[in-house]
Amino acid sequence: MASVTAEDIKCELDTFNIAFNNDTVDKMLEQCLCHRLGGEEIVCEWFAFSSSREQLPLTLENLDQFEHEILNKKKKPKGSSKGIQFNKTRDINSIQELIRAEEEEESLLDSYSTPAKGSQKRALTTPEHPQSKRGVARLASPSLLLSPASFSSSATPSQKYGMRSGRGEVVLSFGAVQGPRWTGKGWSAVRVELLEEGENSLISSYKYMFQRLRDVRDVLTEKIEELGEELRSHFNIEEFSPVSLPVQDSITVLGQVCCDSNGKLNAQSVLLEAGQEQGGRLVPVNLSELKEFSLFPGQVVVMEGMNPSGEKFVATKLYEGIPLPFYCPSEAKQEMDEGKIVSEPVMVMMACGPYTPSESLTYDPLIDLITIINKDHPDVCILFGPFVDSKHEQIEKNQVTETFENIFKRCVDSIVEGTKGSGCRLVFVPSQRDVHHHYIYPQPPFSLTNLSKDDSARVTLAPDPCTLLIGNVTFGLTSTDIVFHMGAEEISSGTGTERFSRIMKHMLTQRSYYPLHPPAEEVNMDYDKFQQFGQMNLTPDILIVPSELRYFIKDVIGCVCVNPGRLTKGQVGGTYGRLLIQPNPVLVEGKRVSPCIAGQVVKI
Image (cartoon, rainbow, N blue to C red; front, side, top):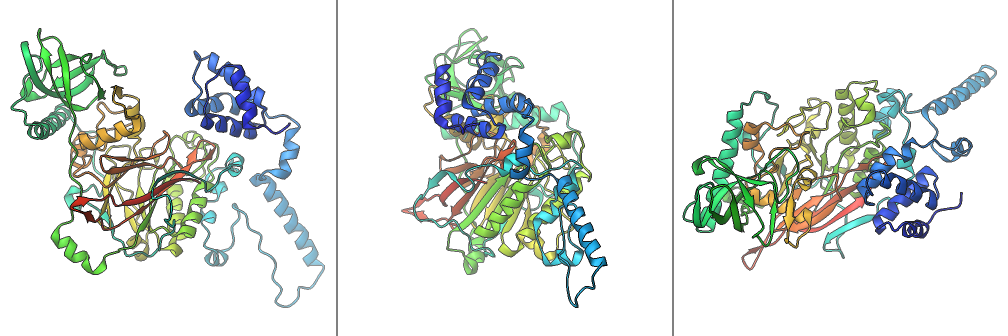
C-alpha cells in the first residue's frame, strides 16, 4: 500500500464537503497508519459512519468513537501477519518458545563439554521469568515489577502505543516561552504538604451511604446562604426578595439554578430555587432580557428582574460571583521558613491515568514516564489516578491473574523505586475510576503501609479533592473530570469567552471543586463530607483539573488552570504537563504576581 499523506486525506474530505481541521486530519492519518488504510478508504468509512448517525461532525471525540466501533472491528488482511512478525513486537508466547529452544540447545552443548573455570552462562530473562533475587537487586528496573504477563494471561505489548509519533513534542506552551530550562534539581528542599491539617483535612477513609435527604437539603441551603451573603455585602444589596412574590417593581433574588426536567439544561428550562429564608420555592426564569449569561445546574446566582404574576421571573441582570483571596502565609510560618527559603524556580510535573493502553494491561506509558522523571529530575511529580482503571476492558471482564490491590501496589512500588535516584517528591491522588479504592466523593487518600521511612518522607498521599502547598504556592487538585461534567451541562450566550475559561471561572467563583448539582451519574457524592472537604478555602495559585477533553493552560482571574490531558488516549500515547514556579511568590508595587513562570503540555 502506498504511503498516505495529510494532503490525500484533505482532498478526499473536500470531495465529500466534510469540514475538518489540522487536528482531525492528523488523527485520521494516524488511524490510516495503524489500520493500514488508504486515504480514500478511511474517508469513505467515516462518511458511512457519519451518515448512519445523522451527519456526525468530524471531531477528535467522534473519531475516537469511529475507531472504537468501526476500525477496531475490521479484520486484518490475511497476508499482513507474516510481514508484521519481523517489524512489530513479538508476543509473549513466541518469545518464550524462542528462549526455551535456546536454553535446550545450550544445555545439550554443555553436556558434551567441560565448562571453563569461572565461565558464566548468560542469564536469560523475560517479563514472565525475571532474574533471580540477586540479579534483581543489581537491576532496579520498574519494568520488572510491571511485567505484563504477571497481570493478565493474554497481555501483549501494545503495538499501536509503540508506533506512536511525536514523542516528547511540546504541544502547548504558557508563560515564558524563551529561556526556561525544563530540568529540576531533584532532592530539593521545597516543602510539600496539604494546606489543611488535622480535622480540616481528609486523611483517612470514612463510613458513607448513610446520608438522609434532609441532610442533603441542609448542605445545599447553607451553600446558597453563604454565597448569597458574600454577594450581598460585595454588591451592597439591601436584601433579597422572595423569588415567587408577585411585584411590578424590580427586585433582587437569590437562588440556585435548576433544570425543569431530567434532561439537559437549556435557556427555556431554567428554574431558580430559592433558599429557605426566601421561601424555598421553584420559579421558571425568562433569560431573554439578559445580554449575556453562563449558567449550569447547581450554580448559586443573584438576579435582578421582575415577577409580575408570581409565576415567572424575568431576569434583567445577573451578578457575577466573587472568588476567594489567594494564600498568604502566616507570620509564624514565614519566620519558620526564613532559614530554608528556596529562591530558584521549582519544576512540578503532573500526569493523569490511565497508565496503560486500552487494549493491553502493559504499563509501558508509566515506565516511559518514570524514565522522563529520571532524566528531567523534577522537584515534585503529581500523579493522578486511575492506576488500575475500572473502565479498562480486561479489568471489567476480570481477565487478570492478580488482585487489583496487588497490581496497584506494584505500580506504586515501581514508581517509588524507579524514581529514588532522582530524589523527586511524589504526590499520589486517587480517582473514582481506581477499581481497588473507595467509590465516593470526596475520596480519601490511598493507604500505603509498606513504604520505608525514607520513601515515606518523599511521598505525599492526597485525597480528591485537596489543596496542596508546594513552598508557599497553593495547588488545587482534583482527579474527578469536572471539566467534562460541567461542559456537558453549562449553557451560555453572548459571553465572548471560550468554554474552558468559563468553567474554570465558575469553579473559582462558586468556591467549590465540584459545583455541579445534581452531580454526574458516575460521581457518588457524600454531601456531609463534601461540605467539609470539597470546598475551596482560598483561591489556589494553580488549579490542576485533568480531563478527557483537550489539554489547556489558562490564566483565569489570576489562577493558572491546567488540564494536562491523560497519559494514554485509548490505544495511543497521550500527554503530561510540567510547570516552573517561583516557590515564594513576590509582590511588585504591592500587587501579587503569579508564581507560575512557565508551563508546557508534552506528548509522552
